[in-house]
Amino acid sequence: MTVLLMDLGNTRWKMALAEGAEIAQLVSGANDDQEGLRTAAVHAATGQVDGVWLASVVDADATRFAISTLQECLGVAPRQVRATDPMPDLVSGYRKPEQLGIDRLLAMVAARAQSAQPLCVIDAGTAVTIDFVDPGGQHRGGFILPGRLMFRECLLANTSIPRDQEVDANAVLGRDTATAVALAARYAVAGIVERFVAGPHALFPGLEVRCFVGGGDADHLMDLLPGPCTKLDDLVLRGLAVIAAGGES
Image (cartoon, rainbow, N blue to C red; front, side, top):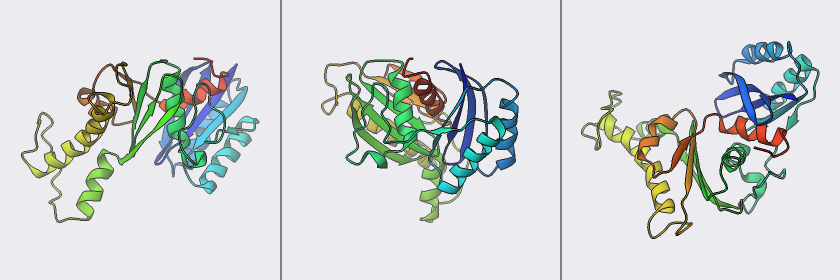
């Protein structure tokens, strides 16, 4: 069975086909690229699509447009996965489950399908989310930080720090302002992960924690994180694929 998956993220949409839990033919576009979305859906319609699964963190109007476009082009009613839906082998740790972003839940589903060890799941995009899952699939909670670029823009917008953009890519400590800001964004994420994965404050003492990192800025973090650490692209789409396949990895 072939299904179409769609991730409506904070700034971009992604679309892919999946057979089982494997995804392929990934395409993406900016959220304001409605024509690109329609073109991608029309292209997908040239093949056999048995189902459509969608996750969205954007507003209701943008979500409705995507759903109606997919249904119009494919002739299949999309199923929107929500934060209150049951997740395969995963239980939300939020006191109010409806407040947990569906993107974070699906990222954890994708990682959980890869490993039954304790997990630290990091999705480094427009925002950076960090979530922890115990061996039984219970989400313990997590953190939300500004992404690398948002971190910089938020800081510069509210201070008189010069807007120099030339960063020393090999620096360990910032010896110019732009590098100091860029490194701070990376080390903030690494410091949180280190605190809760290793040392006296570890959430899972005595157990090896698997870190999975996705998102456009994953490569900026990988060398700072405690191992074992695996890059896993397209976390939300992979989580959708697991759900569409009936929870099987």
